[in-house]
Length: 297
Image (cartoon, rainbow, N blue to C red; front, top):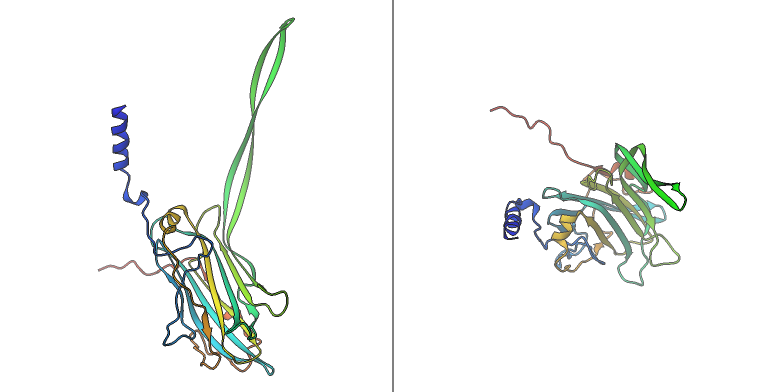
């Protein structure tokens, strides 16, 4: 018994550090209210660019790329919000298996009208990075035979059977977006949601980057706000690293329609935003590949 204990101890000592669980408390992708939280700057509370910034086994970030206010048509106002989400693994075998993103728009106070979500990028179900995998499935059972040799005496025998089925399994990484109305039984839609789902067969994680636009229709030029939440399901090792800790306070993004457009991606026509092509500001990137890295000195 002593020899067995020594062998087990030796085996434990030989396990590489990367295979042993470690614990960080920098990001919080699990729990009932697992939004990654950031506060507004009291000296400049409106339209912060860093919506979410959390570092850990997997970095999760959300940034406002562009915020543009203008006219929807001759009778209404409009706002374009372009958000960029990033999911960057920092360690081996770490990944985000799924991410649920929600945006909830409302007036600055409960008595103020809420903006209407008129259109979004990636509205519907989109598939990418399709893979195919050949699988063979074997199903088996056992049958038994009874043979009577002498009256009152029987000899049982059995044999096993197997059935093999071949199939080609196709799977994809998916992005699913929708416009929703939450918290109200009537009135304009006030919410946006996107779900990022990994290829379950290959377990390749969600896309590294997603950039999407939201076009709002407004009745007036009063301030309003948006609450952004991300709920992420990490792989087993990342879950071990992120199950501890507390979630800091979150502030919604505050919008002031009198502020000038940012125009980072392009120059926008702020006088007629109804027909804005949201495909021109959207992007989904599975991975970034750096070419030209082979150099001779």
